[in-house]
Image 1 (spheres, helix red, strand yellow):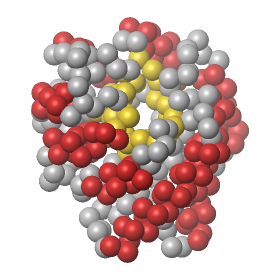
Image 2 (image 1 turned 90 degrees about the vertical axis):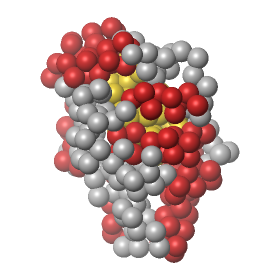
Image 3 (image 1 turned 60 degrees about the vertical axis):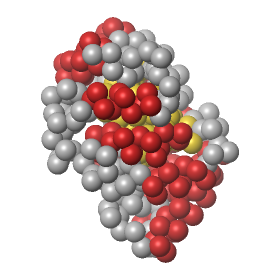
Length: 265
């Protein structure tokens, strides 16, 4: 079974630790992408200290890096500078907490496929994240599809990093379900690059972060696609409420769905 992830609730940390133990889950921290947290060093340090004091092995843990308004490929130097700063702050937190890796979003304009724009996006992201990986040799980078309309451009970026095992795709299957591209095509296109996944349910129209099995996403098709194309990736059940996390994990386990299904690939 591949590693399962959950989002800890610091206000219910004992319950979070117990749930993680029950399902052998690692943590993905969602406390640090908020700009108001990153803007407050005292608050950031308090959060880092809090989590580092918990009786929990953080070596497999990940965190969600800054993503709100992050545009490192912007032609505006001020926007680019601010975006780069937030990403570096995210990486510093990951290093301080000795985490496995950090999830970032593509930050592309939805549906904008101008050739010059795409070429610039690819070039800037490759150059910047190569530098980040050199600066933070113990962390990995997972690039997540946000509201990307198709998987092809993210695949192009990932292909440029084929020589760098610490760069991979975070396939958010719930985001993929909001597009006109089938879930199977998302999995097929990104399979060889996918190192991490986010899953939750929705109505295939809005990004609702429902518990798995309560929306319109066909999880049997998800599981069969992962099997067919040999995806080997860790999986975050991406919702904050602990009870919904538990029900989601139990749904996956009861139905022998990835990552609980055996013999993947």
